[in-house]
Figure 1 (cartoon, each protein chain N blue to C red):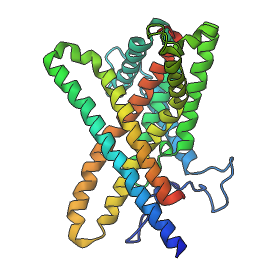
Figure 2 (figure 1 turned 45 degrees about the vertical axis):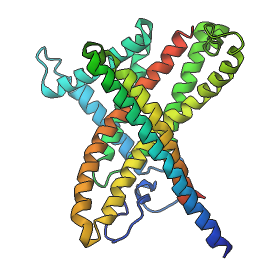
Figure 3 (figure 1 turned 60 degrees about the vertical axis):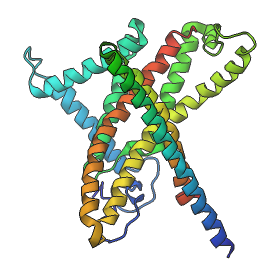
Length: 78
Length: 250
């Protein structure tokens, strides 16, 4: 009985942690969308900023990956 | 033999089974000296690197062959990145950065072959790369600038009251760097491969198998992109950290 409740908490926690992936998706979309908006206004400056774009994407995405990792840990490691 | 994922045969399989480290010969326990599937695919990545950069450019042709121009493009791409981000004095560290890039991109792409194994999907592998960069860059910063390196954490253009608070945040973010640096790569690669395996599991159900096979194709295409982007991001962040060590002034 206790094991059931514990594993229920595990699954609920993993599901809650997966929300973080959606939040990271918002962040990544924000970075890419703003880059595109800026790039269309000034296309000549866009080429030099792709590195910055990827760094921003990476930082935004890393947090989503952390959420995914927490979900994985709850599912398989706890 | 080596890269065999345990996914074949059964209708239902575990999506994380593909990441199990197995001995290459026999079924004994995995010691630190045991040749495993990780060893095999890392070795293959090294062989591919040698094939591309030693054998491929052996001709040193003025008009490069296809293989030679791939090698030259990769070299020029990373060289320009190091020069743009770290400045001229960062070019000295270009070999290390290029090695990281080539190793990561070859392990990522070899891992995309069916039945293969991706060493970079393990945090143990990427943590060595990430913490290696972290320690190298920190030691380099102290070696080059001594105590001035700590100026990295002291924002001299911020208001005086805020500076201690910003310093604390900067120190924390500095020490989280190697963690996020390594987990980003491993997490992305592991997540992508796990998603492909989950859809492969759906393909066993007859009603949705056409959809899931199409989905596997689409996700595989995405993974080809991700494999490159993650290698690129790892390298570019290495450059950014190196720049902080070489020019710590704010």
